[in-house]
Image (cartoon, rainbow, N blue to C red):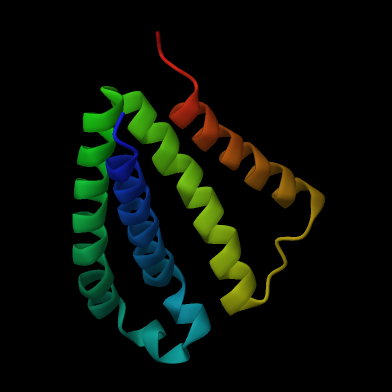
Length: 118
């Protein structure tokens, strides 16, 4: 396994999730976005889609499995969302059930990267 491509896949997936977080939540961070729904969709969707497309492609190439790509993508979404929500919306991620879920997401990533399929 080429860890360079695994890291690139994770980075692109994280960037994609950041774009999607802003697409869904910019209206709560900056009131201006509330009345600009279509602009929000166009501004954030295209770069997010490109990041997800290439991130997914690199993950499937390195793991030879769409399941691994899916598990890593899911887990990375649950590491990005709490951080941005805490930082920009002041909703605490430091609650037991949120911290447990973040820990489980990190565990999913570690299992997919370091536990061999065969």
